[in-house]
Length: 351
Image (tube, rainbow, N blue to C red; front, side, top):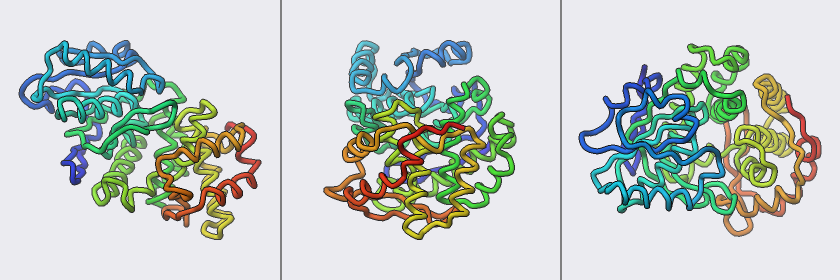
């Protein structure tokens, strides 16, 4: 086990890579604590949970709503939770996002921590202090910045993940390598098979490096005023695809990264060879490089992206493997460019 810390304006967060769920009591502060989780976690690991009140929010992106938040508020009132109560989110990205939002807003703020149980949560959703819910299908439109006091990443729990959940996390791992670490990308190329089978040494290195990359960026720019925007690589189109097509987060971000990299090549910022390396790795990791989606619907969803400002959007481009930058692009120009990639948007090429 090793620890990575995030120091930010909203507080300090300690991420423990390789810590076990059954050691959670060692990280809880004195006093009362309440667990928020989902039905899948309860089915698989209820016997490992500490003897605390447990609230389940169901499963899936469909429960990441203000209605779920309202129900949790009401239950916390019934349980007589007060400002000294500590909330623990145990689960994947949805559980972490919802728990962090509830903790940050109930009674003007409770202390909280996470046990991240999916690969996506361990490398992305639980790290960085973004908490929130969707609104009318649009991703994370309501939320706040607030750091969990701790995040426990129990790598052992990844063994029960379905293939799709592994792919979700792999997409974010590839993203971190593409924007910040060419060596990590090369490691992924060498160890793609081991990554997919969740080889313990391979996964521990990939999770640890992903967390370190994100922690460094967040520590320097918690509220996405500048550098943190590079973490959105692939997400502008990815979130739009999630909205209109029903793709999982990892599938949508994978295609979003291909689109962003394709634009980067067209604009003379990225070499064709680097683009081919990226798409080849995504295929080896069983991630899609194209999507059967109506470009008009995707672009309409993109116009509602929270990163848009007036007629422009801050779009993340790839300059090389391991290096990204943010450019303001007019929505109209982005629309014009995207329709020129029918081989990516308009058909579905699954690995």
